[in-house]
Each structure stands twice: as C-alpha cells, then as structure tokens.
Length: 161
Image (cartoon, rainbow, N blue to C red; front, side):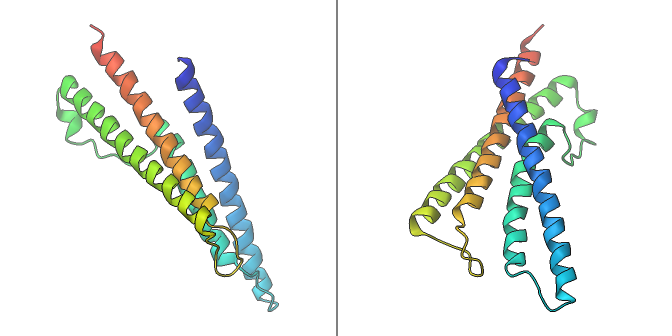
C-alpha cells in the first residue's frame, strides 16, 4: 500500500470513528430528551441537534463504507460477464462515483462558505449551520478520494499482464 492510499485509509477510519461518536451522542441525546419529557423538561433543540449530527453520521461514514465494500450492490448481472467486462464496469463505477462525489463535496464546500458569510444559524439554538455543511463537503471529498484510489488500484491490476 503506497503512502497516499494509506493516508486516505487512515482518514476514512478517523471519519468513521467520528461518525460512530455522533451516533452515540444522538442516541444519548434522544434518550435523555424522551426521559426528561416525562418530567416536563425536554431538552431544547434536540430535533435540530439530531438532524445536524445525522448529516455528520452519513457523510463521515461514506468513505469507510466504500472501502469496506459495505454498500449494497446488485451484482447478479455483472457476475455473469467476463472478467474484463467486470473490470471495465468497476473502473467506470469508480470514475463516475469519484467525479460525482467530488462535485458534491465541492458544491457543499461552496455552500458552507456562503452559509458562513451570511451568518446562517439554526432556528432554536442559534447554532451556526456552516460547520455541518462543511462536514458534508469533507465526507464527500474523502469518498471521492477513496473512489479515485480504488480506480487507480483497479486500473493498475488490469494493466498488468
């Protein structure tokens, strides 16, 4: 494994751990809110916080899920094709996915910067919104790097005799 690939894998692992922490925080926050509602003392902004944390859970888990091939894939037709056709389809998937998530990450970054400049805050807690859009940008950008890395690895294997 070369150095850039190792760095991408490490970053994906770190992001995955942050997503796990966000899931635990969501669970604890929701449980505490429900429990405190029984006493007429709900936690203000729980709905907002769970929504914000949800964006981090999904976007931070993308890269590791792709690395571990943990996403749902329907390979019924592709498995019946010759090895060369499977490789071409895999290369196309990696390239198209890398470009798509690279664009999503870039647009999310632009949006985060616009939110920061405008001073957009959440309605209940008055929290800045831009860090969560930035989290989406980072997660999608990291996924794009994983997909491009897989593209290069697959291409390298296909190019060998």
